[in-house]
Length: 431
Ligand code: PSV
Ligand code: MN
Ligand code: MN
Image (cartoon, rainbow, N blue to C red; front, side, top):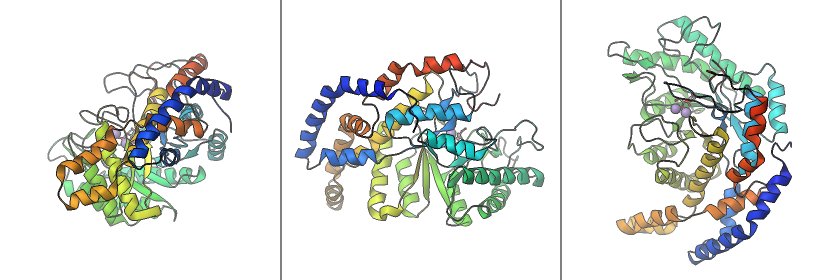
């Protein structure tokens, strides 16, 4: 496997932090032991954690007002992979990449697969894109794609999704994520039921093209770009469609796609209960689909989501394996730094959820000891598991402090010299 960052530098950086890490680790280990928890077991658990990086997250997204290009942004899918390899090399928590087509469409799929493999990466769910028009495309998605009133538009959108499956198959993916921006901006613009009927008809064709071992993830989002009525706006609609389509169809929860204050952990519990939790797009938000770094606004919510996942994993066993992906957009930070930070925050919530004494919690719930039940969760959430995360990274060959190591490596300066800034280019590589 090719190391993008010099392995010697990572070792030196880790050596510098070794004494401090050992001391913190021992201190935390003692405290956890008094709670009946074995720190080495928790570290081993942390080492099993993996979350996919979105290929589009390697660039600077911008807002609908402006995009200020970042230094050394990747110009194509191969450069995106290189950046993703840095994230995985240092965090050891992001072994796969979720590509977006046609932004990442390869001329040679096997070359893409081999390049990823050489960098120690694989591919997670592939994402289709019928929310933008591409150059040279015959039909426009201005008034919708899978729900369009035009049969020709729907056919084009279905064909694109089927092509995504074909490329995905060639690069070793096993799932397709479908998010459509389809909907209406004005009352009366759509027949609300008719639009969903057309969506389902289109999705049935896509579903029929899925290989036996594939899933399709339906990603809901409350609003934007459709501001009055988004066709797949909520988990209820997503659940109904996934149920209608069949067992390979599941729901994908993007944390930023709900109204403020929505109880997302309860949505997670419901979807898990009925076998329809396909996966996640982790990010954080204050107002809407902000695509902020995971854990940057509401880390307690992230913990509560993982608390439900831990409960579901206990009930369902091995079979319970929702896909974990990040989905974030950067305006003011270095994307590699933000993605490393997010991966660490999601991993943190995963480890914190393992600190919850579930048997004790169940007893407290039985006895209606509300305060102590709430404290049981808070105790886990308040525990700073940073030494476990750092030790997990070191034991897996990564960096004790990924951010410091990345900055010391000078990677951004190096790629900035090779990748000229393209004013107005988008994170996707499409102007
Ligand atoms: C839509 O807001 C979304 O969350 C979907 O996952 C898209 O595929 C992604 O953002 C990238 O634009
Ligand atoms: Mn998303
Ligand atoms: Mn989004």
